[in-house]
Image 1 (spheres, rainbow, N blue to C red):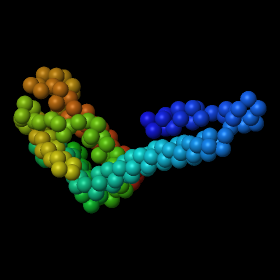
Image 2: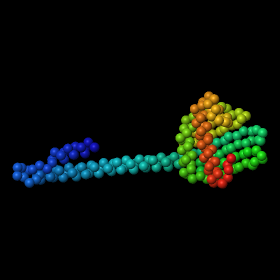
Image 3: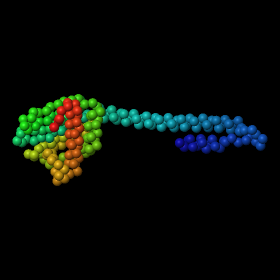
Image 4: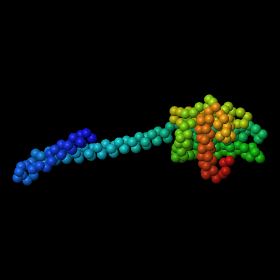
Length: 216
């Protein structure tokens, strides 16, 4: 940029002046210098544009590379919620495997219902959306040290592997936000609570759309 400004100032200093009182135009030397400076300006301007284009291309390439690295990075998710009571072991469990397979199981013995088991392979776009939901929640920054321990009401488990990060949480069944507020870590448990709701809706939609069944 400084070089271009210097050239422009020089270009102005060799403006078209008469060669004398009766001269008809600039001297040959001035014309030559002015033409040289014009060419220099054209070169530096085009070089500047090329640098801008190169920077944009590098930015796009880096974004694509980061996206491909993210897609190729290891990804695994498993969620479980269940309890053992009057109707035996009732639970809901789903799992996103590294090969793109979604495994879903829902067991309710109420009125002698049978267990629902479904498996489906997901596209990279669906897995990206699942990653986005997890990243936006910032659950990977939390820990379950101060969360309620599993009890007779129920048990929840959440395990996530994203690239080099790995979390494994265990807590009790959460009935509502009242349980969250009364816990020792309401902020962290609230993140967990809302993430679980989002993941459930996501999985239920995938299962119902793919198999044309009611997952609940």
